[in-house]
Image 1: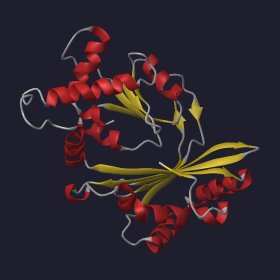
Image 2 (image 1 turned 135 degrees about the horizontal axis):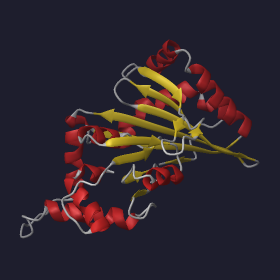
Image 3 (image 1 turned 30 degrees about the vertical axis):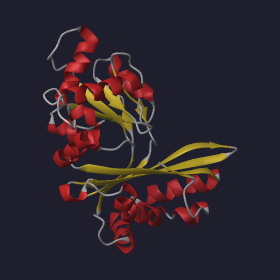
Image 4 (image 1 turned 90 degrees about the vertical axis):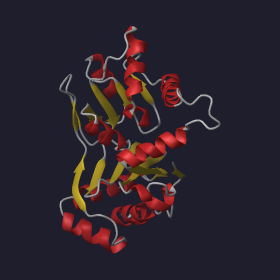
Length: 270
């Protein structure tokens, strides 16, 4: 979602919608709750309205139908805008191509053009980097998965106990300042979506999110989202898994993942 920070995208969206140019049409940006909070930082910097919704494109659809959201994205790499109200990979590619064209407009005869990597690194310098990964534990016993989630909810009632575990796992990790089970009230129809994921929010902007997906006869999938926010420009070029290793250790010890699931590691790492 780095392209949200580019003024050129405002023009791109405007042209695709109405043929007018240089009009800032964004009303709000939106992401699903487990998605990296990088968008939050950009939205705050640009003074854009921002929504955080549960996983599921229908929540974006409600906001776009009501004219409340112009661009959105979710954790499985889907992005889109209100020009079609759906995921649109072509739109995302065209947005990036437009940014590259703009960045290189005075540099076309040069030996080296501005690259996507350079744009992303500049973004990290300005806004910081959100290191991010997802661990999926598939086909976990449904009862064990529910017990793990219930344990995490109960644990949130005692943040001192949570932070004791955090410091025991890795003293350098920031302290947890908030824990909750995500709940969303739709500003359009007033509907309330409960039990949308368990969150642990850290003082430095990092997050741990736990979600349960499917509890059928073949077992459940536990999704663990791990996000480390780094504002120091000298530390934004690290390998993601290396940078996230301390927070991963905290997440696994805090949740007692192996104890509840019997798994020594995730099925898939994204």
